[in-house]
Image (cartoon, rainbow, N blue to C red):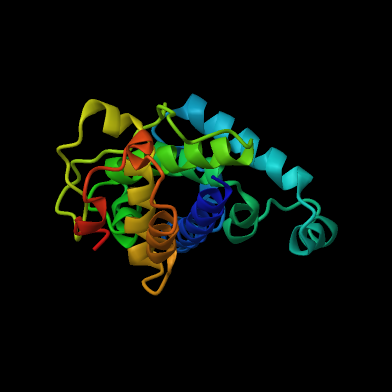
Length: 226
């Protein structure tokens, strides 16, 4: 359903902006402008090298004016994090975040800024959100599809969340991921209308078999959705 995909894209964009902003601010403040190059901040060095190569490739392809200006005015200087991370894809941001050392205080601070108490929860959610983004970007279907990437549902001390007693099938469908998007949007853009758009869409299309995308009975009465 194209209308649902557009709503999801809106949610993902809000989450991406929030994640990028928090990563740039916190990590640059404590680790300097070139923190993304510092292998000591990351758990898996091989993964870090792959992520760094991907980021540099994205930087090379970028046509943003501020990136062109940097290349022209500072040809021998690596771009600061607030420049290069600004053009990083959601997938690249997610991979950099997941690979940060677990003991790094900034990793926990970023997770809390996104409304979660554990960095492992945020990493799980980001991977699932990126996965859905890629499905939509390639015009593939969400209906009746089992998600390869699944977000953690039994999260620690949620503010307003869904019932974590989902069936195995429900956990595989897109419902938990859409719910995760709404949850994060509630934190990073409190005045968003993502939730109401989804509720209106389903109300106006009451014949849709929502169970095929994992939505539970009385889903709109869950704390997150009510």
